[in-house]
Amino acid sequence: MRWLIVFLLASLVFSGLRGWLQKIGLGRLPGDFELRIRGRAIYVPLASSLLLSLLAMLIGALI
Image (cartoon, rainbow, N blue to C red; front, side, top):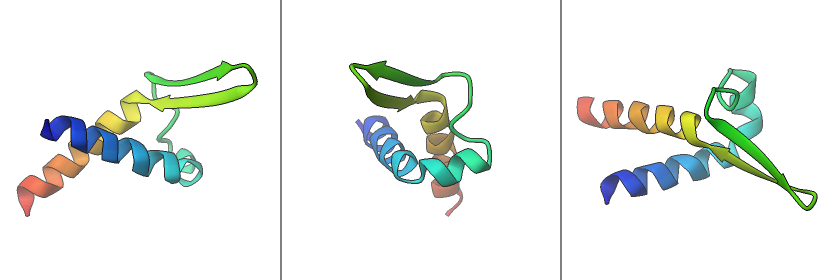
């Protein structure tokens, strides 16, 4: 359950900071998908969210 919460929070943070994070290379990893359905773009950052979740977990373990 904790993994799901961390993954959802990372996804929300990533969606909000998408423009800035793409400048540093996140958001273009293999495993980040952008779907276009009826003119709407749906962005699914699986690999970037996983990377940010692992980073947050490591920081949490060190503190």
